[in-house]
Length: 64
Image 1 (cartoon, rainbow, N blue to C red):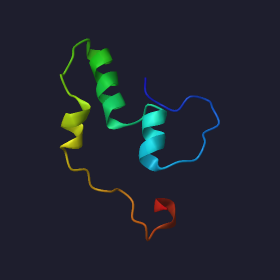
Image 2: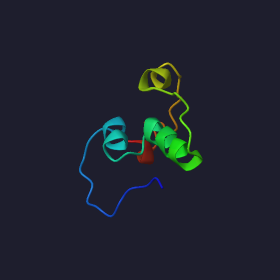
Image 3: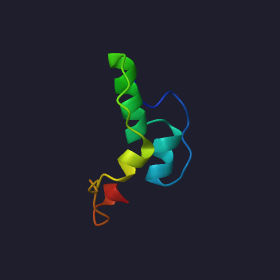
């Protein structure tokens, strides 16, 4: 199960907070590995090599 536990979150960059609370891509891979009971062999370096387009724009208020 992935998700933000019942806690008061503090401020920080999106990347920092996603990693801190276990909501980043590596945590998603780990959750899928645990659910399926097998290791995919995907490392943080593998994920860094993948280009990810931004979902939000800085022009939109919710993207700030």
